Amino acid sequence: MIFFPELLPDELFYSCCARYHNESSNESILQSLKDLFGVAHTEINCHFPSRLNNFVTTCNKKNWDISIESIIGLHTIYPFFHPFLDKGQSENIFKMIEGTLIYRPHFILGIKNKFWTSVLNYCPDCIKEDDLEYGFPYWHRLHQVPGMLYCPTHCKRLKNSCPSCNLKFETHNILLILPRYCTCGCDLSWDRASQIISLDEYRAQLQLISISKDIAYLFKSYDIVGQRCSFRQLYKEYLSKTTYSSLNGRLKQRDLTNDFMNFYSKSTLALLQCDISHINWIQHLFNKNYNHPLKHVLFIRFLFGSVIGMIQEVQKVA
Ligand SMILES: [Zn+2]
Ligand SMILES: [Zn+2]
Image 1: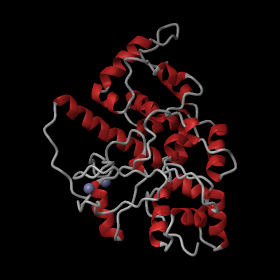
Image 2: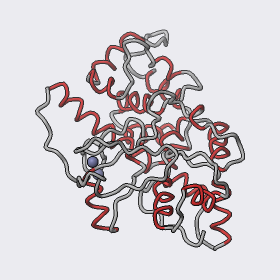
Image 3: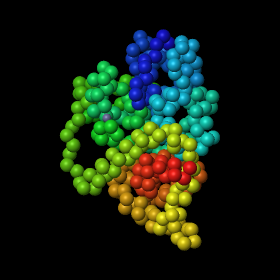
Image 4: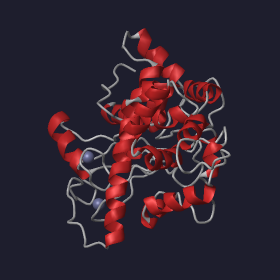
């Protein structure tokens, strides 16, 4: 590896590897993988890299300033999960990414459903801006976070396919850069005018935008939130001071669930795959090892109004 492209703000590590492959003269992806990670047959996972030890060792030999911590903290979606994991779980994730433990991060991260696809998302406005600023668009990590349906900067609905030919940006076993133009010729920064939507959909849209902004805030406060892992305790302490606690200290589950369901529109919960009508997952949030970050974010917003509100509460308690 004689060069590695500079990692850009909020760029997904996978994106930079794809740019490396694109800019190198390598004919096969296997050669690029060998350059980057020392082995040709390694799993390509767009969300979480593996074998970073090999990658960083090669970079350090060339005196390139890059560390595993900076890649994970600034160029993966790990900070979304971090606040809800205990110390042992986060240590294991790091080991899996480094390559010293069998690679199975998705088993620990609390989200095991169909959120994990190998199709990447993009925002048309970010494409336009990045192309202007850097000369090309790139994959943003925030756009890949489960539950992030809108770009937190432009409030635009994220897309995962070409609006003209519907081609999906599938990354399975390939290193794919985000192009400005699809192979059909369509400019991906083009945004079709939005259709007329119902009131419930409009309410959901506003909620999904503020949820996206809250998730983005969680990334900004990576260090602050990470210091406090006991959300279970925080919820209990906070609820004990509200009318959701009876005089003998018991939690009024039904009131809590009803109010939570009224707080969010049905479409919001359905689109986020966090519907509550079949499984009441609110009670699970009080279990020690329940670390589904999106459900925690939804509950935090319900209790504290926003992630910022929750952080202020954490600082008050600390
Ligand atoms: Zn954007
Ligand atoms: Zn197309």
